Image (cartoon, rainbow, N blue to C red; front, side):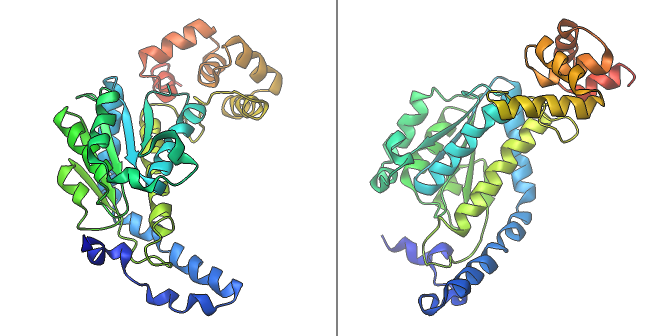
Length: 301
């Protein structure tokens, strides 16, 4: 039971020794200095992250899904990243899903004991009918959460690609993963409080995985999120603005195309640039893997 003593994330951090005696600004500077190191640690793991992105793209192209599985902060971050993909990239909510130990209740209040149930982690995979077309990504700072281990075990048994993200090199989850991402951020400013540097690192990595995968799938043109779902006035305005900017047209032309193309910015962009109907624009996108760039290339633009 004393495995925590061997984890980097559980060690005392010399940089924050006596932090309880510091002024507010001194406390903030200590935290800020520690947080600055997180992106540099992630940089060392880019090759591993790239492998997971490629696996995710392959899964999506064969009709598969991505499942994030975690407990506590890690689980909430997985649910957060998954929930942001539909409005940002126009994905089906089932395409990327977050699963947290303890279920819906654990999103807003601590259900700490839920992470200790390995069988429920496996049962969650059965409930989602995880199979060979899918990818399961287990997220746990310590690397020892039984719930996550159970999910990875079951995912692997069912033929899914499995990945483990952890802040400790001796993570148990690594034994059940085809891909491993080690983000060794070191001891936390508040000993053992992995909602801090470890949580920040997880948030950045999850953003990278889904964003890079969506770019590969053609949901971004240049650096515009052309598959966003305009569900409110802000997003409607953003859609029209991006059509105008990408196509170098007037606001009136952009709005007309937006409405004519059933409020699909990507379709509207192709329609305006190639001067074709909404129906023809949709057809061209379907023929070119939903990539605007490929459509324009084949049209000689």
